[in-house]
Length: 595
Image (cartoon, rainbow, N blue to C red):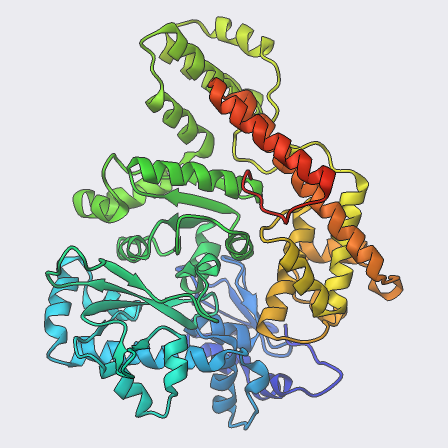
């Protein structure tokens, strides 16, 4: 919102000089209705105007898709710009000279270099003779000119150092190009482009800044040549923090009330061409805590659409567990055996694909079908194992859902629902349900000391970056007692990474939190009266190590109880004994291999 601050900051000057009605009227016609102006929302399709703009307050709100904000957020979301780019756009529009360094990321020069590289690749694809073959290849894959331009796809030419020469001629430093993995150097000091003869797909972060590239071969290459080549990890490109296309998808997600998560960026691109514009993809095979934080900002419902092979199904099972632990509502749009989303769209068409996404099955339904597919129902032992797996699956579900699956199970096993109901009631409660739903009590209820430590960390992290760095050295994975506390900690870590500083002002930090996080912050983080003490921080670290190890042990006990293989049981018990020895002797860093 357009809020006046105590000091007249550059952004306040820009917002004060920007007539939000005139700004938005350039994107969608507005008509005065009482104190406000109304028009069709530029962020979603509608026939009746529901987009309201208040000139006096400098804000807008859509009663349909709930888009809201001020002139800065409007430019960011409508033009898909980063914060610094949006500030620059508004400053130029208002003819205001402003120092933009305070709005720029500490690694802005790397974003700018990647942007220049992206523009170079686009020129080669669309305007150079060498791009003709690549354009035909893209057309053969179903990527027309419109979709290619929408995703800024380009071409890395075959010449050894074309990109290097083009960028250094613009005054960009060789060392910076090397840091980003765009060029490399031989022992003879001969410089060469890393990407050559590849169709280039830029990878952007949630702000829309180019952080890296993925290059795909398009000519007949030897089997020794990797089909895809990604930028190496750098100060701006960390795969475990990137969700491909999230910067473009967020507005459609608000309208559709869902985000469709794919395995790869090509699936995202083809899905958008087929009408599914709310797609994103992870850059790997694991969902990290940073992914969950980004997703949590834009969506509550996640639909998984992965490849229809065993690897794809395994990824779905893993992602359902990870998403469930983070309180997402999950569903699955399964692909037929052997088909990925791209193949499915080609074979069945866009309409059939949209219907598959719209009719995505619940996580429980997918897991039931998956268990049935793997079950051996030819003998009584296989039936019993399948039955027990389904019982574990449906244990935490509602009475209605339990009855539904028991009816299905009775039909699949050729028995009566009454018999299964009797067996189900007699079954002992498992240690931990497999259904991917988040529950604070998935492990034994945490002692108060664990909650106290988690809240205490927030005070120390805000006080000095030293404590955040020390915590991250001790814990290399995200473990939490209360998800709200953990999300707040992740926000602090990200803020320090973007803007290194000795401390963070709590009041200003609280302003960037979600409503739910802010309620927790105001209730539990009383920074004005907190008695900071180095020994207390060390105690908090020890307490959280204890909590992590307790959870690891409970996970292993659950797996040990579930397996029927005696050797597996022995292996799990050995791991439990090893962790108990660590606890006894105070050894080991937080390596949650059993999570």
